[in-house]
Image (tube, rainbow, N blue to C red; front, side):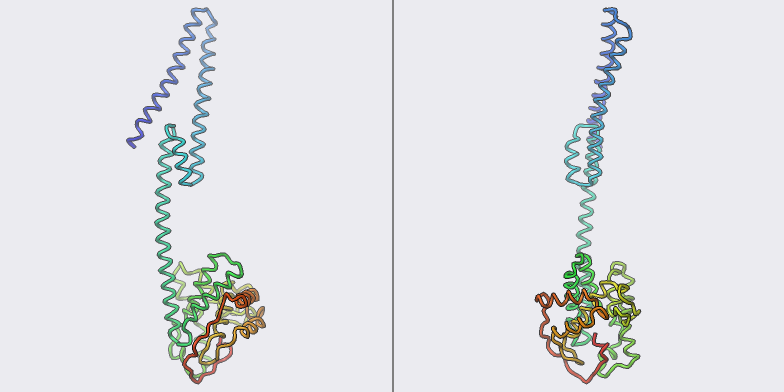
Length: 330
């Protein structure tokens, strides 16, 4: 603050000169009035008028400076604050404007540092989620790449439905780990080469709730839970785990359900051959409005026909004797 002292002395000197000049002017008028035998009230009146004029000029000047400073603060813009600090240099508010400029610069630097750190943390989180998705898919040969494909399909569907970019990204991340609950399913059931019993199928169905439980302690991932927990719900209430209907099912879960089913049916698996995408779209369209969201199905159909989504020829998995219920396929 040492640099501000000379300015304070300039303000004191200016005030002294202005007030001193007014007093000297009044005394001079009083002396002239006495010699010319004017009314003794005349110097006082002229002194008051002069004081009023000086006060108005000073007030207008300070008001302008105050308004400029208030505008600078309200803008919360570093560029604007720098311009205002330059405009107010040498005025009553010069020091305040300079300090506000410094404060804004500090805030901006802090924000940029936090933003950079957040980007790094986000990238690390996405990379970790991708690794988890691959680990889940590696438990069974026929599932390799399933989570990444579902994430890609879901993001494209969401984008085609004209959802906001942040929502598209959340849906992509949720789809990437939509089967994370399978970590809680025993290998003996997950890769069983015989038909699942009713009890075993109930255990497999619980992967949605288990997946939500895995993510729930991580506050930053709470937005992804609906897509993980509810992607097996059906519009007609026949889905699981809660039997939700229609609009009770979040858009995120409805989109992932379509993407998940599309990949399941177009991929070669031990219990089924890969189905033609056109045929799969016919199946989804027949079930649109009852099991699947009609808008999401239409968006998927548009993407496939446009060539945005292309189903690659995946190698057939190692075969073994196994048949599943139709409800298990998706």
